[in-house]
Image (tube, rainbow, N blue to C red; front, side, top):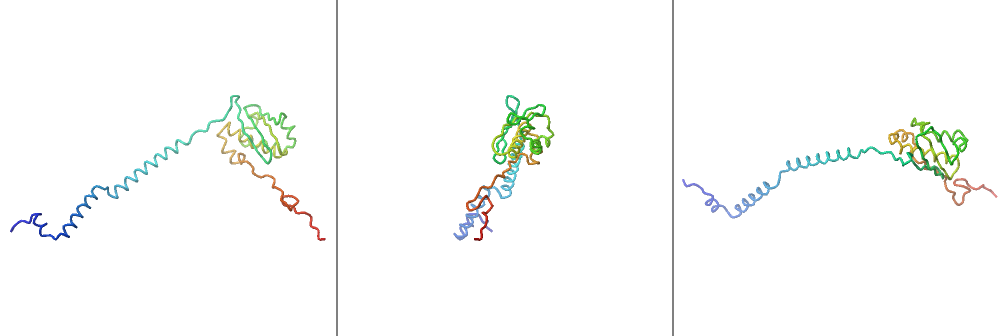
Length: 200
C-alpha cells in the first residue's frame, strides 16, 4: 500500500476545503501571537495592584504635617467675621491679656456674656491664660464684634497650633456664622413685617 504524502492529499482535496484549512492555520498563528485572555487579565490585575500601591504611597505622602504660621515676632494672625463685624486678631504666648481696639476686654466688652463668647476657643482648647491677644474690630454691634473676635481667635489658635484643629472644629469655632440680617422687601415694612392693615 502506497503512503499518502501531503502533496497527494492536497491534490485529492477540493479547492474549497484547502482554503478553509489555510484560513484555520492563519487564525492559529494569530492566536499564538496575541496573549491569551487569562494572561491579559493577570497583567491588568498586576498593573492595577501596582497602581493601588502607587496610590497608597501617594496617600501616605500627602499626609504632611501642617506647619504653624508664625511671623517674625512670634505671633499668629487671623481674620474673623460675624454679621457685619470684621476682626483682625494676633496671638502670642503671654499671660492671657486680651486687648480689643486698644482697650482691655473688660472695658470694651462690659457684658459678661460677650467676654464669655470671646474666651470660648481658649477654654475649649485648654489655653486660657497662655496667650496674649490683640484684636482690632470694626463694623456691626458689640454682639457681632464679640463673635468676630472669637472667630479670628479660633483661626489664630489653629495657625499657631495646628494640632488644636479637632477640638476647635468639633465645637464649631472655625465655621463662619453665615446668619446676617435679612433684607427689607418692597411692599413690606421690614423683611417680613407687613404694614398695618386698615379695613376702611
